Length: 414
Ligand code: HAM
Image 1: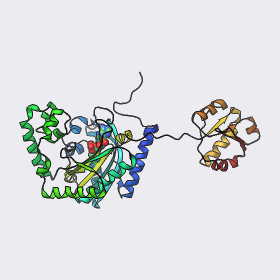
Image 2: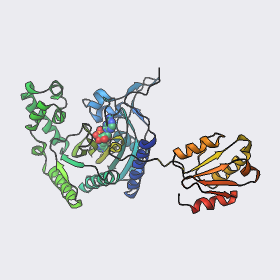
Image 3: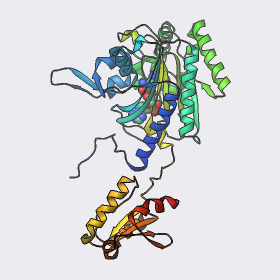
């Protein structure tokens, strides 16, 4: 039986790997320009780093974490997200000593979800966090950065920014109580899945996909009725900033996000081009979380985007095949072959040889790869110490001394 990969995982190569590398390159460029420091954390952490902060009733903690016992009985989890490991790492390495702190990272996350287009069990995230400021300028900076990065990677995609405010923790608790009361009154009309969430996680009923639930959720109390004046001002400032930058947004009072640590600003960039996995990027504020994890009592805000979902919206990237091939007739001329290989390597000239002493096969490979040039080695070349460079498009051939090959190649536009 053919050996199989684990469900929901995939190998990256060819155009998909080129897309991954292109995304990383663009992200790093903008991160450095905006003074973010790169941080890579281990892919596994102690399980309790995730359970409470993400919410013991969240889908991620209830169903999706890859958790296992180490040989010494420690409970470990493959990171399902980057925010909590970043905070843990900042505490471990005393990075909060100097504020504000701006961190970014790119790496693999693990969630045991049902795989489908745009949803995998191992996937990659770009992640940005800013610690140490409550100012709405920071919310605006991060949303603008997200917008610039997405626009520069997928300029032609239809992407919409959704924003909401969940207010301060106390506003949110009050709101949740009201939602629980409302959904309890409508219990008989809700889906089983939503009934289970009424008392534990009523916010999640707001983004249920069941038609009945949606109808009931549309009439539920909305968060804005529970926001403090301070939260409303903060939210208005963000909207003013987005208008100022000319970034369109949809105010979405039902946007609550899937992880428990959020408060105040939450946002998502969505597309209608990916079917049900339509969120490309999501984030928000999580004031109080850093303190809960043992760090200073400071504010935090960030976002993450799925590299695979962004890749699905990118055009295929053509991998440039090697333009210069070597073709040799017989093993007898190996000395002459080694000489040219050393010369090309020394001069950092990329070349391809199929490791075959067979002119026909090597040339046919060169033609298949649409290469423009081949260096030919046969009896005459070896005996008289020169190389024949053939233009595979025109058929034109030039006999060259090894030392002239570099200039000859540089002269040609390839
Ligand atoms: P999240 O919404 O869980 O947020 O994930 C962020 C993004 O990761 C999603 O919008 C999606 O593009 C991608 N993603 C999530 N799950 C999968 C999956 N199974 N397969 C493929 N892509 C996926 C967070 O993770 C928060 N830590 C974001 C954040 C940072 N909030 C504040 N700072």
